[in-house]
Image (tube, rainbow, N blue to C red; front, side, top):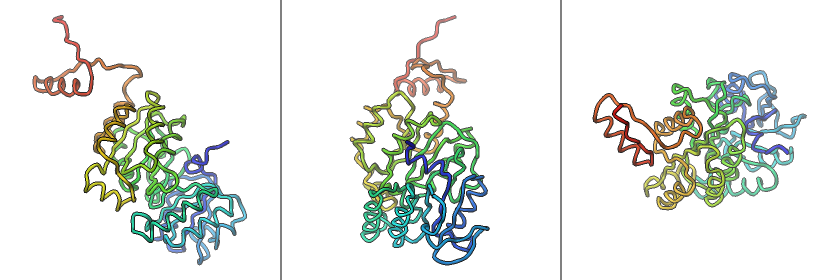
Length: 332
């Protein structure tokens, strides 16, 4: 049986709900991005008015579409999303991206709407989001609303990030270093599909050899920890955990409604899972490059080559501080 999460990365058909005749609308821009990226599946536009966008007929509801749909992309205002998701459930659509913002990150009213989405999801539809960019997968031909020009070359690294804009930044920074991605998920508020679901899926994904993530908080910390610990040594797990200060935690709550978690808990997580802790885009990219280039089973023993004495001292400190072993060279 196909994992429903697969529908987000390799959908055979998509309904874009909120695609208006205006080419400036997010729905129309999303359709254009998929066309530019080379999506090979079926696309359907849905809106309460309008006749056609980019050559596609506009249906009034997903229920009016005569064919089966695997994935819905919802970019309507937050207050309309519960009704739209109920229609998706009636249409037997198993996967939905809620691109729209205005949910738990925006106050009590938005929090209540998000709870309603979760209640609907529990009846048989998985949600990525809300407040997210969704998936990017070269093999599936699917990309972000702003990603029509992203690389179509598939790689070995996966990325999950609650921030869509940062995901774009990581993709751009990685490209020049030769890193290509198997799958990326910008999953926003994680009301239904969360980081534990994605970690579990990507640990089993044959296309993914390295797992990277930007985390503001986790919805199910115990499950995320257990999955990471169970998979220790199978694939590198690289994590950029933010929101560790009081101010950062408040910022995370206003961005994706996340509960960030304490420093001591995350220190214990890294010790017990052997996940790699990074603190910036540069560190994430460097760690990714390292794991991409190092041969399997190379161990901890290293030799440092430096053009000057200071480099040798700095390098020796750096190596020993992370547990590498620098054996002294013989005179020969």
